[in-house]
Image 1 (cartoon, rainbow, N blue to C red):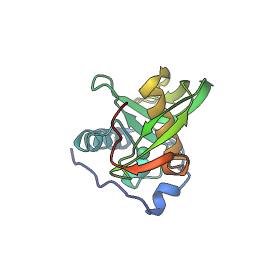
Image 2: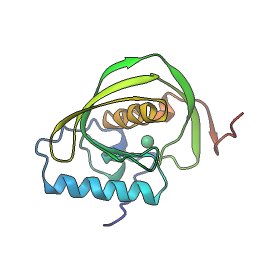
Image 3: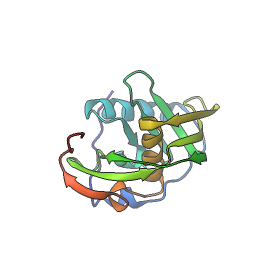
Image 4: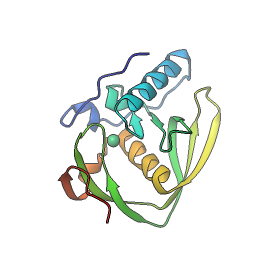
Amino acid sequence: MPVMEIKKMGDPVLKQICAPVEHVDKKIRRLLDDMAETMYAKEGVGLAAPQVGVPLRMAVINVDKKKLYDLINPVIVEREGSMVDQEGCLSFPGLFGDVERAEKVRVEYLNRYGKKKFVEAEGLLARALQHEIDHLDGKLFIEIAQNLSEGRRARE
Ligand code: CO
């Protein structure tokens, strides 16, 4: 499976509002596989389709190297609380900033076979879900981050 090129800061595809996936077919599954491969190769925990130049509502997430989420047409249906932590993005290599996110989210999505699923998440998974779903609406973390800096800040 090929590792895809990641679109970087300034590429207009990153600002696009992505279209829903209409048919979950083999082509979509292949794209999800290539996105996962690309995410692993770049050591990211999430990747959205527009980041590989495809303006469709799809993302892959794996925050613990155990469970890979293939998300098609994901929607946040519940959010609770708030948390602030450092965030980065494969489209902005080396840039990090503090981003406020909901502490817990419930997300509805279609899996790689088009079956409706829900995931309830907190912590890093909740953060990744919100970050990737923002990508599908052309929203970038640098637009909402505080204390943007180059390089990851050491944890206190
Ligand atoms: Co990102």
